[in-house]
Amino acid sequence: MVDLVSLCTPDIRHADDLATLAQMPIRAVFAEKPIARDVGVAVDLVDRFATAGRGLAVAYLRRWDPAIRDLAAAIAAGRYGSLRSVNAYYGKGLLHNGSHMVDLLALLVGELRPLTARVRCAGFDASDPSIDAELETRDGAPIWLHATDHHDYDLFEATLVFARGVVELREGAGLVVERMAEATPGYAGHRRPGRGVRWPVRQAEAMERAVANVVDWMRDGVPLACDGSIALAALRLCARIREISK
Image (cartoon, rainbow, N blue to C red; front, side):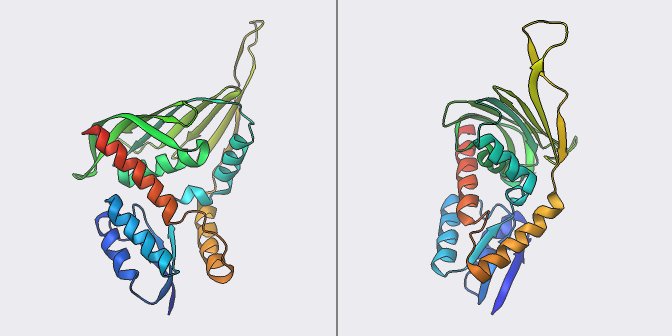
């Protein structure tokens, strides 16, 4: 039996390749996203892996990044106060790269509900355009997902506005900038976000932690930080955005 297979084929092949792997004598698969382009197909794949007792880890790598997980914990603990709004930017297709952003935002601020959407520009390929979307959190905070043209340059960033300050994810979400509100010099009674504290996201370490997590799952049954059910949630949200955009 093979312990672990890394699935890095093109997006359009993921579903068929996972279906093949589900029938083979393997213990786990570490798969690139999206696991499928059709929600029904993805549901069947996730069920098949679960029924067979095989691990399915999906490479939304920021879920293994210690800095991002620390940020998610700080948000959940109320460090920044109530969420007011989010502006997020991505390119190269809603499924291919946008699903990274919706998964990251779900990790940080919880479940999202799409309200409006429209196709903005070409994406990863003809079947995966980049789509603008307006969403909201369970508490009604607005989330604006902005599609950008990846032919210009790659942009994957987000600004989260909270009651106590602003958190910025810059440089491909490889840098976190925390800007807590402070007194505005020369203007009594006014406050503004400060210059901020910066710390790098440790993306290389995230890959190491992902592999270690899969090994721990195989040895001791430790839960996977990003399994098929999490990937399926991101895919369902993207599918709903695509439906609304038509």
